[in-house]
Length: 165
Image 1 (spheres, rainbow, N blue to C red):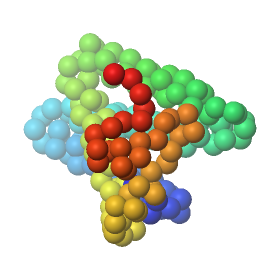
Image 2: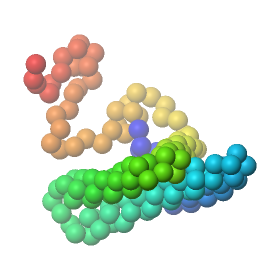
Image 3: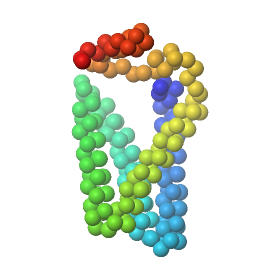
Image 4: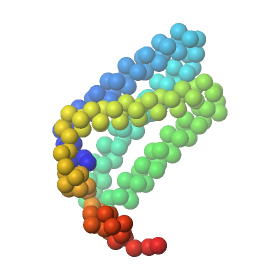
């Protein structure tokens, strides 16, 4: 599915995401101030900032693991991701306990960041052009060496080569 999503598009996605995040943050502050709920707007900006920081740290983490030349890069990436998500969760829930409007603004900001990111990734993929056949979809899948492959014939017949019950 991501075969048409080339690496040069990633900086463009990043730039558009950060720009849209700034615009949404300013709009959230203005709207919150207008409705006399400034803490919600501040929280939304904090959430958008945490989402942006997490997005930037993902890139740094991938670069660091790639430079380490590890046999199985999944483990350090998973540990790093778990740590980042844990810190963000503690911050968001901690702010919810301190001030509900601020905390819910943070949660809303984090959710809005994800929506903005997904929209920008989808836009870049749409600009790359549609995949024209089932073969494009099958060939675009990245297959892990440790994961058994389900053949198209097995899918059609309902038979699964992975084993199990």
